[in-house]
Length: 302
Image (cartoon, rainbow, N blue to C red; front, side):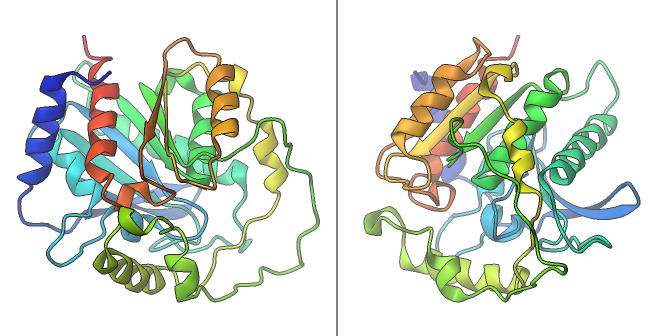
């Protein structure tokens, strides 16, 4: 349960955000490939958090959306709460080009996340090094969960939003075409995650569709998705916060129940955002989502 002090402080920080500033872009080289990593930081950070986007859209439309007259930037809200916020564009998304293969695989995405976490940790020397958390959205939650399963010792915790992976449904290996299809993204797909009419505003949807199509005009191509089946909730030992909107069809309650009860770590929490759906980070639930993350991080402070 969130403390009253945490709720009030986070609400004040969220409402008092300064005028939006663009994120700082970093070039992180992983196995010879250049990844775009975006950052927004407060004057004094208490922890770092790395945001991992979902299947179709890259980091800036999802996490730093600027809407005239509204505050919808997830990065701004987290930074205002005292977090050093990073967001990675995985290969083929946003400002990160595809690699020579033209494809992205789960194992490649997880390896890149490990490398970015190491890069974040190297930016500050021990003992003042900030604890690092992962935040994964939708498919990004799957990537974050796999990263946390593989190297829990590198992370202070992981936050999973819209995590619809059913641990009883294993992803089967399937053949991919010889070449990546490189299909164009469309406006209807950009608006599809806004499901519950009273959960969002029309200016938010309009701004998101425009930003998403500008950042990701071509759909990124994945293959070898059976690699996701190496995730085992029982092997999750990092502290975990599972969050989902109660109206999210991509993360059914039955699946969330399986995940939460099977997580191996005793340090786990599950929060349901009432009235929110798959785009909870961009909807009116943004403030509650940020307060929940702040509570999760502060409960680990000494």
